[in-house]
Structure formats: structure tokens, C-alpha cells
Image 1 (cartoon, rainbow, N blue to C red):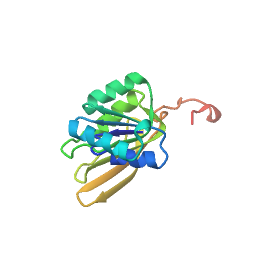
Image 2 (cartoon, rainbow, N blue to C red):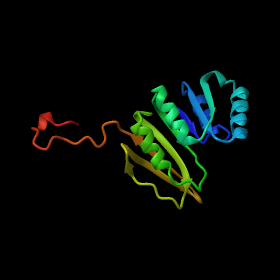
Image 3 (cartoon, rainbow, N blue to C red):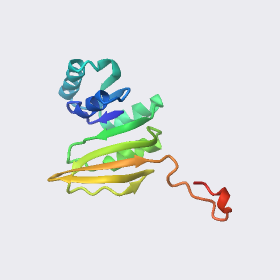
Image 4 (cartoon, one colour):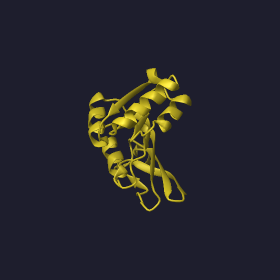
Length: 157
């Protein structure tokens, strides 16, 4: 799992405590990175985690070079940032999303992300006052067009 904009690491640590095999935490703030490391030590989950201090966009490119797709992605960017959808689409195009991956974006309730983009489809939108959660499911085959004249049994499902 990937916890981008990790903050305290709470989301990723919760995922690890519930059975995620490993987690990557990324935050640009040095203090946040230190807090994530301390929280991982306190929960004895450090051996299942990688923690990086990096800008989210640079981290996406660096993680793509490792060629390891994620099944679960949390994005909790500052509310002033409104490009989480673009980041997820970029992650999909770089092979960072496993087929059937789940991506959760926490954002301002004022921000409207699309229902579908880049192989991702929103399966849930929940609003809690000024905060909203958009939950997306990724399909590696989304957007693959069927051959227009193919017989029914030859169509790609």
C-alpha cells in the first residue's frame, strides 16, 4: 500500500495493522517523516515499511522506476491542492496501480473529482462537513475498446 502525503502515517499504519503486507509512506515535510518513523517504531511495524521524504510528484516517478504496483493507495493532500485525480491518472499510466487497486482520496467537500478517469471509477463518495472521501477502483482494462465488428463471442469483456 502507498500512503502519499503521509502526515503522521495513521492511514498506512492502520492498513498494516489490518493485514497489509507492506507500506510505503511519502511526505515532503521532514517533521512528518520523523513522526511516521516514530509511529512505526511504536507500533512495531517498521520492518514492513519504507518511509521517504519527497515531493509527491517526484515520489511517483521514483516509485515507478521500482516497477512495483500498489493494491491500496491513500492520498490526503493539503486541501489547497486539487490535482489528486491527475496524480492517480499518472500513477495508473506509470504502472503503479495494480489491477483492481483501491485508491482513497481525502479532499475538500468543495472539490469535485470526476466519476471516471484514467482507468479509475469512483465507487463511493462520502461527505463529512468540509471533508470528502472519494474511493476509486482501478481497472487495467478500462477504456479498452471492443472491436466494432467482432462477433459476440470474440468481444473483449
